[in-house]
Length: 101
Image 1 (cartoon, rainbow, N blue to C red):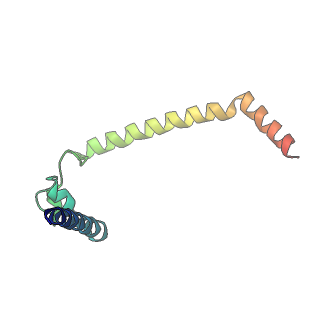
Image 2: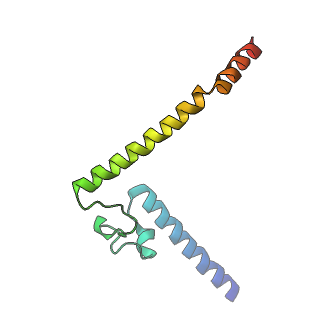
């Protein structure tokens, strides 16, 4: 009889956990974050962990971050242009065209 009580307790805990997950997903209540200690209050937005949020102190930091991202994207584009403009890549495309005909 004692075994059934433990099974029942674990089933109830699981059901509670699933219901909290459903409420979190549907209504964005952050109940699981509150249970895990990641937020102080599940219904207020100021309770988020500071380490998980990327915050900027000033407008200049935002601008610097955007400029860094733009530079990284430009570098990636240059690499992709080099790959596409290689003669072996163009030759392979021509062979593929001939193989389809």
